[in-house]
Amino acid sequence: MMVYALSVVVLLLAAALISYPLVFQRLEPYRGERPEGRDFSERDALLEALAELELSFHGGKLSQADYQHQRARLETQYIRAADAVEALDHEPSDTPPSGPAHHA
Image 1 (cartoon, rainbow, N blue to C red):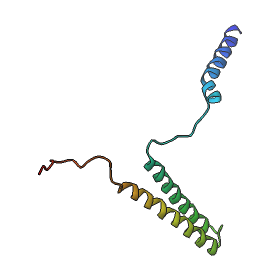
Image 2: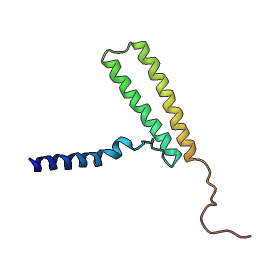
Image 3: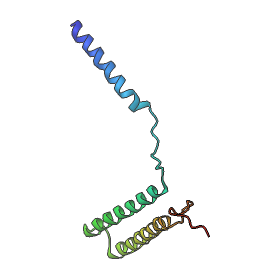
Image 4: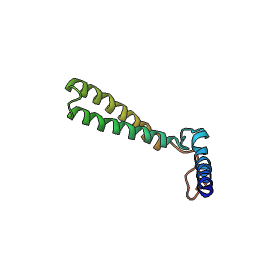
């Protein structure tokens, strides 16, 4: 009986030790280091929303008018997000071009 009680106490202590960080640790949202990561995530979210919209429409949950309206809105948002990423890719950098310097 003593062994049973001791094993229950050990199991309870182990469970408390393992669950303590899960219960009492404050979770914070992930913040990416690069702005490109945010734009890429935004594009992914919009593509996922478009896919879900397709499923809802083909599943009979949306009318044709609602589907077309929401699809146009999501496509416009996606194009803006993609254009923002492309604009970041084509920004001139602050570093001078590498290569041999020409002196006159």
